[in-house]
Length: 100
Image 1 (cartoon, one colour):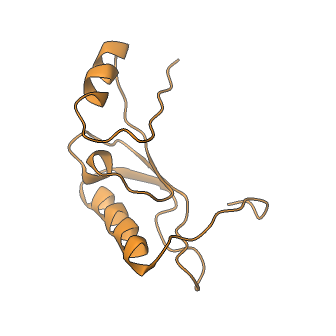
Image 2 (cartoon, rainbow, N blue to C red):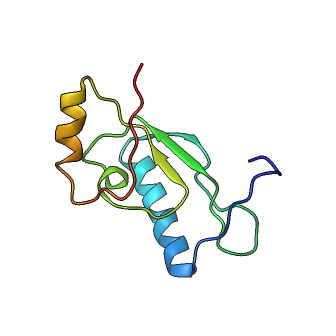
């Protein structure tokens, strides 16, 4: 992370632990950890910005809202497929799609 980047801590120990648990579940379930994935620094509730690829819809990191600096890269083949998958979840606070 660039020293010019500002990122705040998680709100408390409970949220910090939940995020790290979800990161661990991504690794355990077979997602590829591209970057980050651990505590940042030795004080406070900071988590490194984390990126996973090879994420499937069945993984916890795809099904649960993490509310932390964790991004999941999930591939799709068509706009219709991604719309169907997006509508097949109970969450939808933040999502983005990139194609091309």
